[in-house]
Amino acid sequence: MTAMSFLRSDSHRLRLLLAAAFALLLGACATAPQHLSSGSLKPLPIPAEPESMNAHTPNGAIWQPGTNVSLFEDSRAHRVGDLITVLIQENANATKSTNTTVNKSDDVSAGLSSFFGKPFTVGGYSPSMGLTSSTKFGGNGATSQSNTFTTTLQATVVQVMSNGNMQISGQKEVMLNGGHEYIRVAGVVRAADVSPQNTVLSTQIANARVEYSGTGDVYAAAKVPWLASFFLSLWPF
Image 1 (cartoon, rainbow, N blue to C red):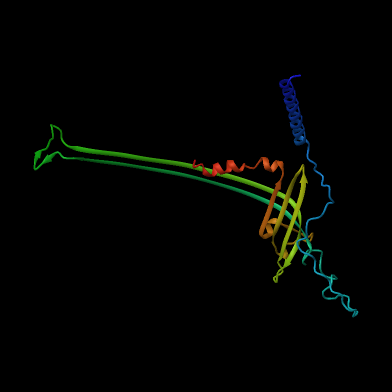
Image 2: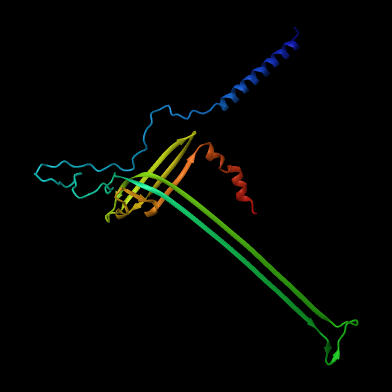
């Protein structure tokens, strides 16, 4: 075997090895991702810990201050650390339309037919001037938007204000098909708006922040790439 044929054989083997390695890499990329976490499932952090109940000396009374025993209270949330069910029912509809019309026209004419009582001509023509202009503009615009968000979420009372209003915060994380979905809510609730079933509507939350977002391939596919977003920000039309 000559040196030339030996080099050709090694080059052929190298190409085969590179092709095999490329095929293995493609197969690894096409492997379905593992959706199950290898570690133990841990709950999300609690926004606020309940206040500790101080021990009391027995004095024969049924009701003791600073304890969890109450004869005339229901199960509605009213302390830091209590849970409250938030019924998220957000419906937003917005419609806007505009119509603009502008018309403008000008007509100017001037002429000199006589000069000191005698006809005035230049080269057999009476000097005169006329100017006409017209401008029209019309514009129409309309926009419409509708959003609906309905779900149920447990929130925690993180602060009780001096007037009895409660600041709440809660979140939920769901893993679905390799992506994470997050639902968060925060705001201030009036104690009188909490129902006997310990629920409150999202429309009754002051300074409310309701968030529904997620991560994963589905959300990434719907996102505009950064380079396209950059050129869109520079495009003037």
